[in-house]
Structures are given as structure tokens and as C-alpha cells.
Length: 347
Image 1 (cartoon, helix red, strand yellow):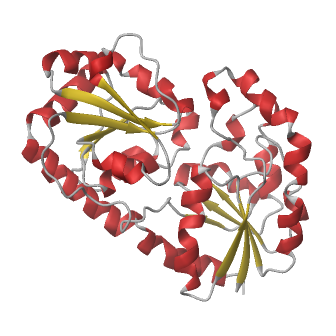
Image 2 (cartoon, rainbow, N blue to C red):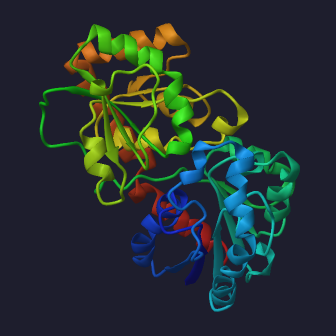
């Protein structure tokens, strides 16, 4: 079986983790996937994410024609394949030429993409109605598309547990509370700035380790307590392995309910406990075992983080359970056979 996979860009997290990391494993089942992405990356280095949404739209709209044109080679290639696998829309918040690809078409979505732009929120349903199958990263996303009458599978974003694994060393001079992501999501990290400030004052040996494309701009945290590690695909695992606790604060809105907890799963795969907002899929993952905490307010954030800082045994226990949960439910090894079944259903 030959599949044309159309993704958003070389360094797009969704392309890397929803499609690319499965290619070698799928080949073992004689499913050959060829990935195509536009020569103009959808997000580049995310330089515009620090601005308001209207400003973010400018680099997208200014190159819209080129972005759509850059999809032509992938569209042509799809007619030489048995299945077209489309990872998100071709142009952010718009339905464009997805329906020109060869059938059967499968659309893969791992975010509440329809919420990006109020004026075009119906674009996602328009795309899905032209598909022959839909893969969603969680049940909340799948429920949104129920009315489209398209065969739907819920498939979480898998973690490569051979690549993401616990660190081999056990002691460090500092204890690191860690966060990994893009600068466009710093708003969530800024929400717990006062929590972190309290912890730094109570535990002087605690530091925050941020792994992202650009450094954060905190207003209250002492510079000596914040460590920035520039993100790259080559060093991301090494960076997370330095962490002792992984955090994922979120708001409780529809957008966050669409998230697929991948940051949380990366922490768990490296054997560290998690402290995450119990929103959307995060709550589901927390329910798998005692892998961390789901604080809902300022006091709970302080109490849960302080409990983990105080107890190396608790960190170890929860970290080991988190690793096991990923291996059993969210590993690439577990996801690939499910993908194979999906693709084979079209033959």
C-alpha cells in the first residue's frame, strides 16, 4: 500500500508526531508513506505568536497564494497512491484545495482548528465532509465532527518510547520544574508565575527549565531561577530528561479541550511526575494511574508542586507509573497497529 501524507511543515509538531514518526513502523507492514509539506512552513520559527491573533494572521494571509500553490506537488502525487492522508488543513482556518486530492482521503486533526478564526469556523466541517475517514486525537474532537457522517477513529498522539526515555543519572545540583512548548503558549506558563515565585522563595534550589523557540518574558521571576534551553528536534529529549517535574498549565476553554496532552505524555515517557491542569484529555490521562496531580487553583498548584519537591520517593513512584502508562496506552508501538487497521479498512 502506498500513502501520500500531506503535512504542515518540516518542524511542525503535528507533522512530526502525528505522521512522520510512524513512517518507519508502517513500512514494516508494507505500508509505504511519502510525506509532502509546503516549502513555506506554516509556522516557521513562530516569531509572530507573541502578537495578537489579527497580527498573527498577516504572515499567513500575505503568503496564502504561495502556500496553496505549494500543495500542488502533493495533490498530484496523491493520484499515484492508494490513500491520501491529510494532517490538518492546507491553509490555517480555511478550506481550500483539500478536496482536489485523490480518494480515499483521511483527515487527521489534533486541535480544535475551527476555533482559530470566528469568521471561518465552519471550514473544518466543509473539509471533513469531503473526506472518506477522520482520525481525531481525542474524543472531544471526534464529538465535534459527529454530524459530518464520516467514519471516525480516535487515535492519541503516540510517543516514541525508544527515543523518549528516563535519564540515566539520578542527582543534580538543582531541582528542575520543566515546561516544553512553543512561545505561542507562554500565556499558560505566565498563569503560574506567582506559584513558581512562591516555590522559589520556599525552596531556593528549585529552578524553572523552559524549552522553547524563544526565551520567556517573566515579570516577577528572578532571572537566576529560570533556565532557558533552545528547542531543537536533536536536543528536545535531552532537555526534558533534565527535568524532575513536568508542568502543563492550561485554561479551561474549548480550545484547551481539543489538546491531546502530548506535552504531558512526553514528560511521562521520560519518567517524571506531571502537574497539569485537569482539562480535556489531561483529565483522562491522569485517571490511568497515580502519575501526578491535576491542580485547579493557586493553592492546589502550590501544594502539589511542593509535595513533589519535598519527596524524591514520590517523584520516583509517580514517574515510574507514568512511564508504564505511556508504554501501555500511548506508545508508538501501540499506535502503529491501530493505524494499520485504519488504512487496511479502505482496501
